[in-house]
Image (cartoon, rainbow, N blue to C red):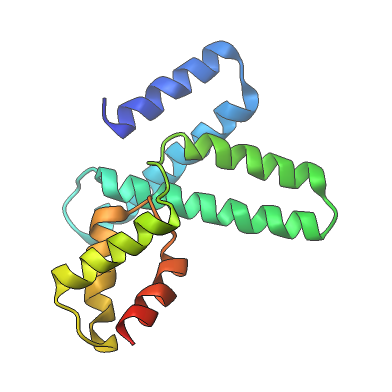
Length: 152
């Protein structure tokens, strides 16, 4: 079952179970996917977005909610922070397992070898390889400095 079908099945289950919070989050995911499809129609031929695009959307949604939860916690709005964290857990169900530090280091080393990178100028090539293989499995804002350290 592909990710889009899985999302639809989970949406129906949430409706049947009357799980309002889960249903709300699943509808947000579907809305974000539809928005991306509508934007893609204007750019090129009308086509559905792929699994990698959906993974990128989900990763972006998680990152947004992490930032919001942090801001709510700093502002003393713990109930809103908890809501954001609950949304993160629902979105996280559809993302692949996150790589641990050792796996990230190994992935970076493999990407550097694959791209034939020798200096910091090749960082873009390395990041492209990583994004192609590990979208949704690692935080690229944290990976960037690690790649820079290995190349520099």
